[in-house]
Image 1 (cartoon, rainbow, N blue to C red):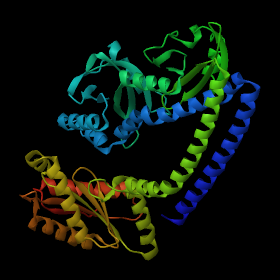
Image 2 (image 1 turned 60 degrees about the horizontal axis):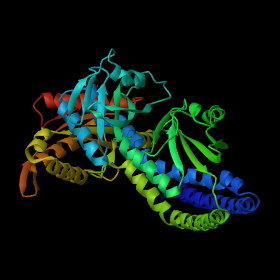
Image 3 (image 1 turned 90 degrees about the vertical axis):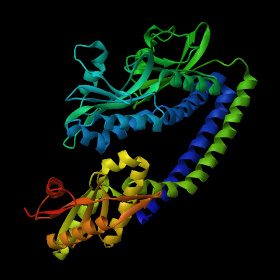
Length: 486
């Protein structure tokens, strides 16, 4: 961890300590006064908002996960490359969607192409989206979202199973130039979300439900007996507008002769309001016991958070840094961090007046390896390939996994001739090496494109020239090195 990261960690711990300490002291003082002055005021100002915050925190973990998954899918290089490659071999995308669905335990995963309008699902190509089909209106609604909005959450019947109602996260997909190319996402079973709401209600003894920005009740538990919207809810007619125009609010109103305390909070990722309600407590002693219990729990949670934060923040920060910059399978640098490495190498090259070259390497017929031996063996071949490449490189060279079976090697200090010699050494090394995995003997070859950076050339153009050379190597019969001199 660098000095800046270490300082940031210390600042965060100190800030968290101060905030928690202040929050604890203020909450204790206010709650103590409220408990003696008015139990009703205590419920409205402390207990219910605290419950709402706790539920909101659990929603962050339980319900926002599909948004995170959909975001990863929309940014996935494979999905965009496959779409831009004219959607060839649909089984690859279908297999990808099935793996997403199995890995993250979603009820569905899908991708709709803007070009072909095919609806790809984890079970196959279900249909073609039609602008005259009412059931397909969601796609055109998502496509027409403002530029600042990249996704929507809606509840609809599952296209793959019309008998099931699903919470969908529909995420727009853009190509590498920002052009809209389709919509992807996952679905979460409404029954699962309802079970979470039931769990919240039992755990906190509150009524919990969600509404959209217009006040329509979108999700609730099976025991919900309220109206379909805030505007038609008994006692809430005059409060609906205030609730829907504030990111968070607390109110009390009369319903069937009882005082009901309401806390609302906008969940921005879902664009829904979380509504938590509690009726007036009947007995003072029970509320006071709950009050002291909550204070004790708050103190324990405060101390626990400080201890855990101090112990684990540094470890998770390092882990996140590694995850953000490293390919999980091979341990090589990933595609997302290449620009940073390239800028550093380019700055150094300008100071030292030295060249920079890159190699773009692709395993020949790698699909046959996966088809013949399975993806597990294919992964082992990729790991072995990575180790062989590392053995041929110097310390300052950067190895990136560029795609499924593609690797990019950044060679600071090497001109085109030197890079070509290294590429030939790598090609020969791999050609002569027989990979042994799980008792199998597998021979592979590679095609390599080589390009040297030219003055004022963007990284994208350099990579395109190397990619063109790689394409020429494949066209010439593979197991070759081709240079781009232009």
